[in-house]
Image (cartoon, rainbow over all chains, first blue to last red; front, side):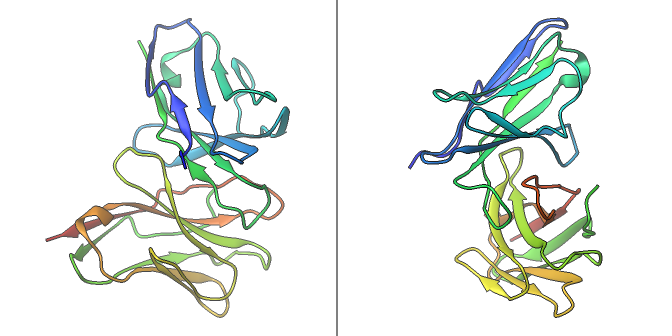
Length: 115
Length: 110
């Protein structure tokens, strides 16, 4: 049973470029969550998606950030025109069902560095 | 904002029980208590969760007070590999997001 997979594990982008982070949930999981962790801080929720639908995007910055979870393929977190403040670890989690009481299983994260 | 309060750091000798406290005095009746840990810079690892009854699994035990205002995570025989940041999370009702605080940095020493 493969766990949650994220790629790339490390990503370096220059200011103004686009960053695309991919997340493949565990087999049988149709709920995906994205979190961001700044250095020396706890994780902050960004967005929750279920196949083809955004359920909760209350933690997403209003501009430059978007997320999708298509019917086929991985979930994508896209950051346009990156700035130095976007440098962080981005973690994806998946669960088989939504709702309180369900566990979220996390991937290893993508470390984004903006130069 | 996180709804939990945890000590910043704790030490524990290898082989002894590690008892990690968490205060959640404003918890609502239908909110669960979750525990995750993060080893170094890896993705958080689910440990255990509970509503009102004490829970035990292969990793740990969760003791929730009767008034549900606090809980304790118990690692019965801590090993060096249990060194990590432990997060106590109150799962907000009617939402799926986990709200992480700053956690407790547990250092297990030989």
